[in-house]
Image 1 (cartoon, one colour):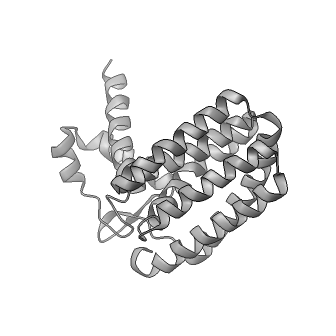
Image 2 (image 1 turned 45 degrees about the vertical axis):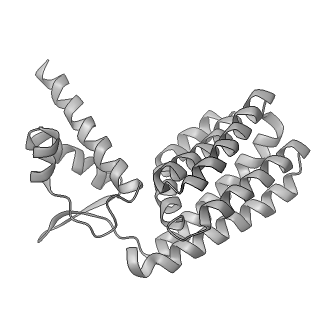
Amino acid sequence: MSNIKSITLRQKAYKLVKDRIINLYLKPGDKISETELTKTLKISRTPIREALLMLEHEKLLECNNSMGFIVRRLTLKEVDEYYTVRGAIENFVLSLVVENITDEEMKSLHANVKAGDSIVKGNNIHKIIKCESEFHEMLYKAAKSDVLLEIISPLTDKFQWFRGVAFSIPGSAANSLSQHKIMLELIEKKDLKGLRHLMKEHLKEAKRKVKYLSEFLF
């Protein structure tokens, strides 16, 4: 029973710190205080240390000998490579979505975009990140490929992290939402060529914003 409790506490600490990183409550270079986490979560150091090691393995944290655990800084080369990989994945996703998406899934995507309108107006960056991420996750599921989901699962947190960085620039979320609306129109028309062009521009613009902010964040 104590082992199960330890695993539960570790997962609690893991999820909390991971959410704070992905949603930019903790920014690249910020120090993670094990003492603060112990007090805040009322969890002993062992499960907290295990959680931080898990996040280090996922390359969201790194251990600095002088500072302990800090939120990892990415290089511009890594940003380029992540977006290149994502571009290849999204191309594959779109071809499957056009073939396999159901009417019910289209309704869910439209509902997501409609909700996005009010969220963007409210200017809550964390809700915006969540809504935008859910849109892309719906597309991944609509592709109907278990292999795709297996491959992309470890990368979705990084994509969400970059999304949060890009949305730090005023107007970015509204622009991204307008592109999602066009994307739905193209899916309904089964216009794969148009979709791929739009997604390429969508990712190109996002990468440009992330690299622009890299001086301050990475």
